[in-house]
Image 1 (spheres, rainbow, N blue to C red):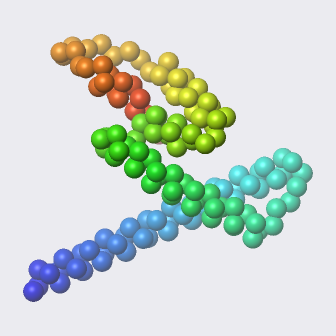
Image 2 (cartoon, rainbow, N blue to C red):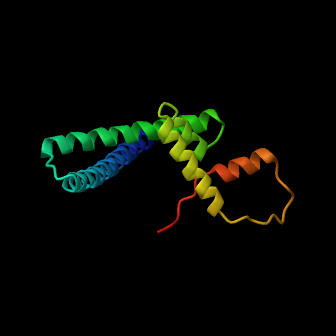
Length: 140
């Protein structure tokens, strides 16, 4: 019985750590969105009340959470473990302007990517496409 109780305690600690990390992420996201809203309001010579900013911030966070879940599902459906640019573009299929902007951004990223010489056996075209489509982010 000790192993079961120890496992339950460890699982509960993991959940608490995950909740703490989520809360920290939500707080940082909220601060960033409020800062953006304040800057945009100032640029337009407007004032936005704090409750409205908090509401917009919460909506943006919920949207980002749902987007992340959708992207994960798209990748899983395609049999992949990682999200690629096509998944991101697919998530914007109801907004033609956004989808076009994302395609353009993806093409720009592909153009900037250095061509890597292959020293091994040539891979299949499908593997090449997947490798090109994976969004790479720079390390800071």
